[in-house]
Length: 151
Image (cartoon, rainbow, N blue to C red):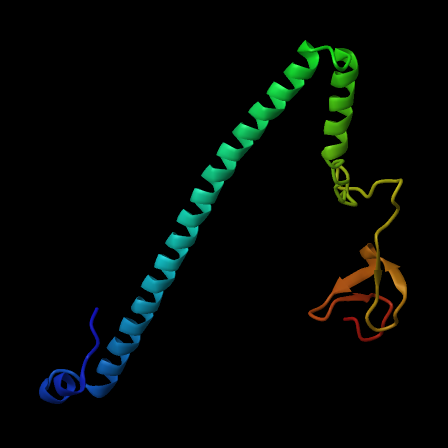
């Protein structure tokens, strides 16, 4: 899409000033979108190249570790069972423990779990902790039903 120039606007009787302005704005938006798409494509290709390089490095590191461990086992420098146990322990230590998921207060069946009790919210007006079942959600946040201006 090309921009409408001054002389084209002056010499073309079928084109008004506001139409030319809208066409030029659309052309600018199209140029911007094209530039953003090109930038996103470049970033994606750069990321893909880095991932391929990292994949090659991981394969090389895995091979090096395998050769080193096998050499230690073959030369009987270290007891094979002891080495396996230490490697397993190191692998477990390297992997972080799973993150405890924040469980929904509603177990299967839609009821709050007995261990957690009812979920409490702080009322925006009276600043008291109230159960979720006795709150109303407003645009500002939770308001308890006991507040006079809640409804």
